[in-house]
Image (cartoon, rainbow, N blue to C red; front, side, top):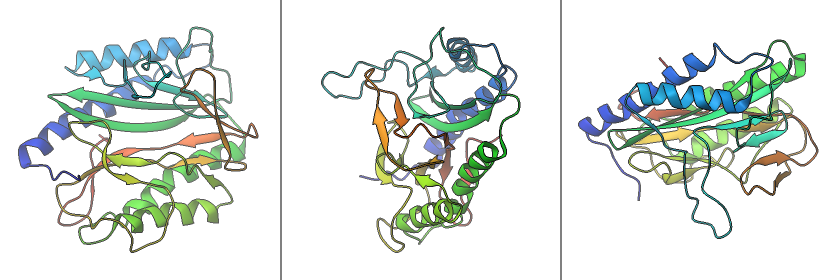
Length: 256
């Protein structure tokens, strides 16, 4: 069931989402060659807790037999890792790497969720274009995130834009509603037909998150049960924000 947030709940959502935005602002200072993904994870957790929030991904239980709880505070995925990468003291950032970080902060019982792909130092023009297209795909999608439109309008706009740029959309994972739970209804694929799905209403809070691959769309899951990689080893990028549907334009909650 899709939840419509009250004014008080929306304020709680804004607070949680601001923590996420502040965490990215902090992380940007440290994303350089030589740092480990575990160190970035610790920086993110420290920042969230300093702002009165907890890292909601830490200990997250997917409820799937044989899959352990997520062991870290944020997901950090490098290069061909699409999503859900587990931070490690053995993963050291190098010049040219693409680093996707997915952060969820829980504050006052409500979640804020966003993802960013950062470039370590300088990278190739094609890698830069992948990161730029992934980010723009989000903004192409939310042009349609307006009261009265349908969720399929957003999904269609994202997928059409990514394909027009020569990249592939990840179809096995999707965006979602968000609030008291990290993942709420509705599911928000990054592709689809316009005019389908639920009708958007003011008070809905949604996490919209294009996941884009340079090469073919096929993906694999690593033995850790979490990390998703591209099958052909091509680069991937991820961009996400939590938004609020209003009477007019959507409000992006996870940007300062």
